[in-house]
Image (cartoon, rainbow, N blue to C red; front, side, top):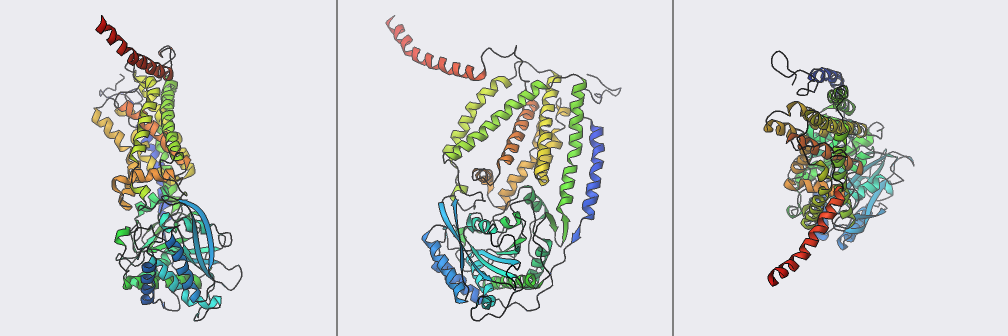
Length: 624
């Protein structure tokens, strides 16, 4: 081993192959994006308060919520109770003279099968035929396990009460307000099943290109303080004007600022777009939308949602919603569109600046990884066997992913529309133990095929180990570029792996606890993602299975799954290296004459023959 006069291994030697000086130096390049992010910090200006004070009647809304939840306790999509809920909402809108319109949507829901969703909406037209549209909505369905008095009879009753002042716009009696925009009061179906009805309305051909703002009312009569839900189906955020206007109206109505997701969770939502609330499909389509709620990120369990909502809280949030609607209607022309932002209270950081910082944080890793590859080339160390070892591991993980897809086609996993699954749905709560066990058994058998080529037959040379590390790091470099090109916020989950595992070649001669410690640090990204589901949705140990259900219904796209499997293959190779169980892919001279599949078949056949011959040999021995 080449050493310096101090006795330490020389830079660039096999013991210190990573160029630490280059790695540290390139971190200086991250300073410029950080400076740009600092200059992008701003403060959104809310719309002015409405000129007319809110007239929302909390007592009337409570009576509506009580009547709705008692007469229609089971409103699960496709159930007889869902038809009763449709009639109830239609009748209430009709009392104010609205002509109720319907949108029927065929979809498949977990645990419900193929159902027809019914979106109901009443329209208060604006001054022109093509006036911009503001949508106020609330889902009326529930999961069928409770009365849904708060989730979402409270939002449905508030929706009807908010529509009352605009009744004259449709020729009904009692109204007094003519809106400057077209107002759509939307009662959606499938809200308890990932917002399937809201997603369908977001694509409604008559409105999708005219909607400039959406206000969703969900579980607004609970004991918790009001909260704003912002996440979308894509890495976008609602308009800053809409968010700050909502915050100001809630502050005026309740005397306190509404809760919002912490900055870290907002970044997680941009890196992995997800929300159980119905603003998500609109934000994902570039339409500014927010949800007003008193619940946490997971709606209350059905068995806890039987009491009538709080009259005081329902009136406070109802007045805030009415003031927000008036501000939006009286305000300047709103532009349809949404871009990513991070909200720190009233201050905001532009999403492009955050994405730029995350992308710049790739540079030190990429520079060091490319330099490591160049060192191997200069030393004429062969990388081919290490790449083929990674290829074998990748093939195995892709095979496991294919098995998961096949099991899904056979009905082993939940199926449905590509929407988030409600945590209360049985498919999300109950693990299919038998199917998962079968999948694990088949994966273990499949591992026998590449295992034959990946088992160490001899202690690998230092050059071969270094090539193994380099091949895995190069694979991670390619994955990082793919993630940066598709969703740069997703680098949040990948960067810990890149910057921790880069140093595994440097510590490969250290004690095993050091090597395993560095290896485990690289799993911080996946742990953050699964942990966010465990904590925010109160899923605990079931968070990993919940993420798997998002894959089975198609909410997580195949490209994302492929990236995760390729990352797992690199992690497996680095883990084998860390515990000194790595072997380069054997050459033709080192491989046995039969391939792994033929060898496995031969072993099975010989085993069966041996079992058949055993009784005959025992019989001969007894007669002999």
